[in-house]
Image (spheres, rainbow, N blue to C red):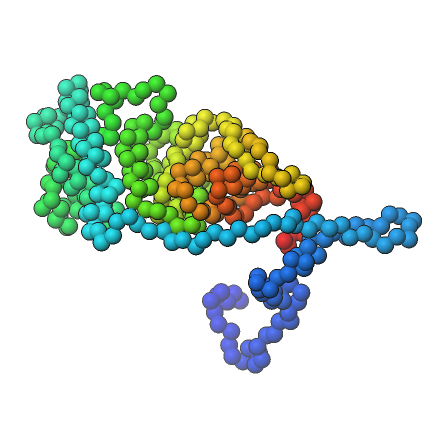
Length: 372
């Protein structure tokens, strides 16, 4: 007998007239929503209490060990919206905020320098040697605009952009290939890298100008975040990072300070050299704001690894305003929160049960109550 297909429908004569009913068990009951405004602190302390068993062969009742939260004064961060320093800008004017004349001049100068050194040193094809003309600032802007067009409209063959989208009215395909052949951000033949230069020294000058423009063009809101970001790269480099189960699983990693999808500042990361401005596995000392059991302030310093210190490095760049930084459990522990508080910056986020400074009594309670 042939087995029925999986998508075969059951005939009506074999179907039950009444729909199936499932009884709600303990696991399927709908959880009651908690109104945060109506929560009493005494109820929270009572929920966190742990019942200690009475000693054997004794008539004493079990004791209630209180694990109440320490009393604190809630700090209110003003809900300030971020705002741009420039309004009513056209598309080209907005682009020039970040790719200013200084950036384009560096690109044009280094491209011409690299082309001259290549043509003088290595034997190239005759068409590359005869038809090369030094590029200008206007040509570099058109070259960058064509690359932006590539990102908006995807075609299998690059030459089709000139056949279908008629890009020849802005720049010929032959001229584009020659500029693309010699395009450079730093010609090491004329400007060799200095001693102890970072691994990204080839793009450092341009990156510093764009990063400064990002900070000067926008004032972040009072609620910001710090997280990692990936720049896709499919070439060969020892500095790239591979992350599984991510939209971009291979490329360069950045540590970014963002506000409403705007990247305000960032730090580069290398699989070999670690975080920018830090030596790999280097411990750095930061001022820490804490208090003793009597509530008196203490002046201490915390030694933090680069993964935690990068949060403070990015927070140092913020203007002198009130901020609350949202972090995930990769960054947040008690010393990081206290160092941010010493800067006058609040933080909020998730942490791990084994994070540094996590209360031991609360850790044991969470292990016995996995629902929390």
